[in-house]
Image: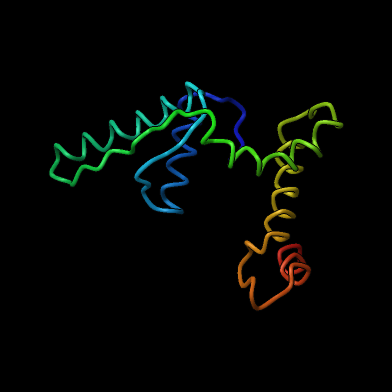
Amino acid sequence: MLSIKRDEPAAKAFFEKAIISNGLPEKVTIDKSGANNAGLNAINFQFIIFYFLGCAFMPIIIRQIKYLNNIIEQDHRSIKRITNPMMGFKSFHSAEATLAGIELYHMLKKSQHVNAKNSTAFEQFYTLAA
């Protein structure tokens, strides 16, 4: 998820979107970003409120360990390799469109697309582009 600002509301929106699409995690490993920590703490606070309303309470464990996040950062290395020579983007819209295309390409390359076993990456890309 790409956002204009890197603050608590943006981090909270990211984690809520991730929880809706992937389910509730037991642990989350993040870097030393204060925004991510604040976003997860806000979500845990919501869970505490739901607990007092009678729902089950299972807080998300936050791990801020620099080296455990390296696996995730390695996935972004290819994006950084492509975007660094560009010397930044002039607008948020162009950054969003370019990064979405790069992410789509890498998802197709790693067979993370829908029906990966039934169609080639080119066929899947063609159906998405059409």
